[in-house]
Amino acid sequence: MVLGCGAHENPAGILLKVVKDGKPVIASVTGTEQDPQVWSRQVALLREAGVLVAASNAHAAEFAAAMVS
Image (cartoon, rainbow, N blue to C red; front, side, top):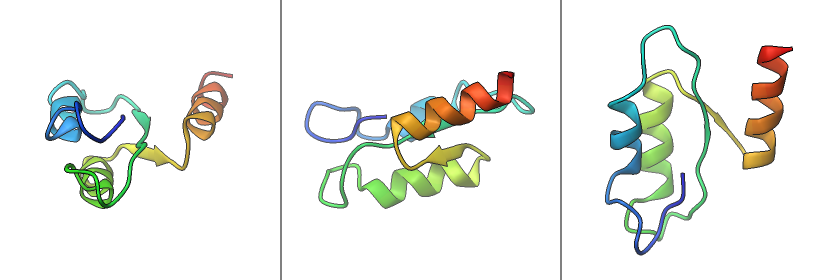
């Protein structure tokens, strides 16, 4: 997810509307605490829902590749 000006006010909330129970979800969040969406708030929402939040998009891709191989 990308935070900042022009991004949805709560992108984690939108993503979580389509997350299915039992299906693994991997995400990375690009932004800062100063963004209107507040990075830590978005990460907390995702983690509370069971989403694996990777440190970067590269790590997210590595996790996803490991899950399917």
